[in-house]
Image (cartoon, rainbow, N blue to C red; front, side, top):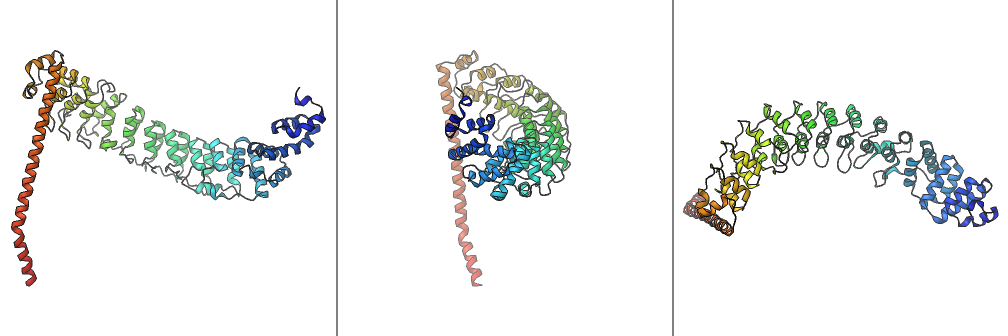
Length: 509
């Protein structure tokens, strides 16, 4: 039998045992008991000390604009188990603006106006909650309230405030309300130093970015904790429409670098955002040759690694702004980059595209003396190695700073595929391996793809010989340095007495 079908007397007797939802149902369905059970419901809420039921009770009175009942509940101490800030924040989410304002008025009358010094705490303020949830009417009401603290919040910085949240959640109408406030800090920053413009650019909220950029107080060049600007953030995510809006600002720092050395062009290139890269390249202010990524790499280096940007690279090679002879901090050229991109990720045709440009030095050596061909062999990039072997301009025997040639590198690394490619090329000299003591029959076996114990023994012997030579070179260098130090000490001892006598003479004089 349903509780609603019980005799009235029995229902009233057991009402003290019912939970608040059942009591509320009885109040709504049985007008005869409504007045009597109202007090029972109130007593039950305080006995349970439930924050949820306490909030619901106050919200129901606020909807009815029952000031007396709210004052009575507040006077009874409901705020001992219901957080005032939580009470109002939940009301902002679930109730209409009029009920929220009525509830806040009652709170101010009975408890006093809330101290807004804690608005930057971990618990969001009502205005910030309204900004997150897109409650326009409530946000407007809070901004107009004398005790709402809106102006103080909008002027503050160093936390996730209402203006930042309106931008982050793409609520344009609320953003406009806040921008109209005379105390608003348009460039407020959170703990990560992200501004409303930065977060909107990062998330691709075009309407927010447009409104913020129309405000003359907005600084489009503010940097976050990593040194990134709004342009860098939007370029990283490929937000091409936001990038266009930002580039329209004449004061924008288009070549700014973050703390790791990335530029907007470098960031967009690293993610293969074709439209964003082309949009940036179309801006004459962009310095295409500035180091655009970690290690001082120009943006062209970053583009070469991307499958999507081969067409862009082709256009860049024809663009007179690009210096194709640039090197990174390790002395590598764009050819080194193309040669060392892993064969599975390397864009097809990229190395051929670079080889077709006769201005590029295909044999340029980095700080370790490695050529692009050597680098390709070292990283076992068979497709690039094969392509370079077919180009007569490539010096296939060019060794590194230690005198190790590509063939010896492949041999010492026991790379059968590389050895097969190199030994099959008539331009590759096998003499270096013969000089290391590798027998001719072993070489013949390698050319046939045969790797046996004899080959492995030869590799170990060659490696041991290379290590002995390197040790001998280190000892020779150490001896030469010691001799220089001895001669320096001898020269200092010979001139020391004369220096002393000179000093004495000066003193006597």
